[in-house]
Image (cartoon, rainbow, N blue to C red; front, side, top):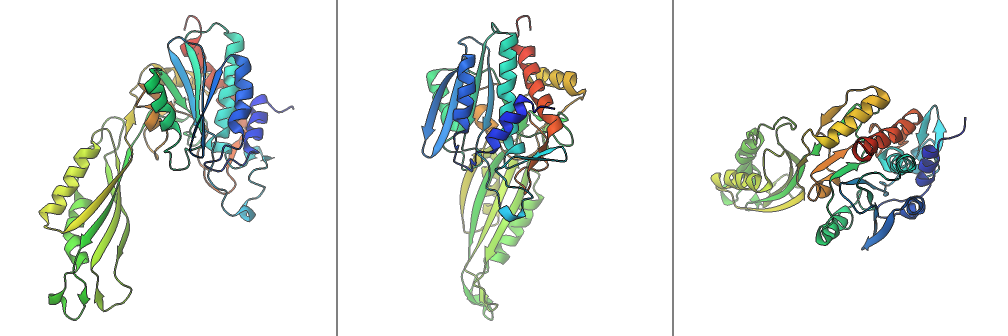
Length: 380
């Protein structure tokens, strides 16, 4: 049996070692397929990052496929069963870095557009691609740069499908209609260093911080909502001490993170943390880092179109979920009212021997095509 067009394109993309922030020609390869379809392609570079905005059509509604061509580092190559940038099929699985996250999705999106446009050359609205090579990195020169440029130009987006690997056990069992926000803090509790035999001459920041930390752990930040679990506060690192067992440390440093829902705001969480620390009379310094705001697409036109496409293709009633880490959807949601993430199963992403099951590749392409048909085909 000959390989499908989607599989062949996926293999070509995997063969490019586009470790973040490198694109290694992936976007140019896609441009060469999109331009003959009538897409106007614009490369937007920022720092070391390559971004692509490609659009076919000038009318509303605008449907966007979004994703990233960069991948995470391979890790120890000698632990891979086959070369990570040499796509290899074994036991019905396609192996290679980026197979699941997210070069299969990119290939499926492009081939879905080829098929849809061939069948519906005079489709409604516009189709666009928003691609970056900075999703797996700092995410400062990628999707956010393109979104800001589109906002400045007044280019509106109506629907966006991000090709993140969202499925769990099988293709189509889960899509993401939102993601939690991420708010981190680096908290330094001040004390006074001294000899452990003379505690009256020192101030132990570990002892001083303990009651406040207990309150932060016990605090109920919100109850979540229909789509989100309650906001979570977690400590990730605790550092104090000189390494000697007879010295009271002069300070204690705690790294923590909120994964927060739309039931809370970053400002409200900051205020409540400061209130708890102040209530305990601590001398402290707190540096905040907001990595991303939460976003939510309630059930509506886009989620219905994707769910119906999944049902028609693989006969699954998909689950809407907001679990998992952050994605570039958080930037796109600032300029687009409906953002949904959908892609292949995510069990192997970022791991040694990352892979995707070959049997899912063409159905993924078909679901993307069916989604376009549900939204943009004449009479849809």
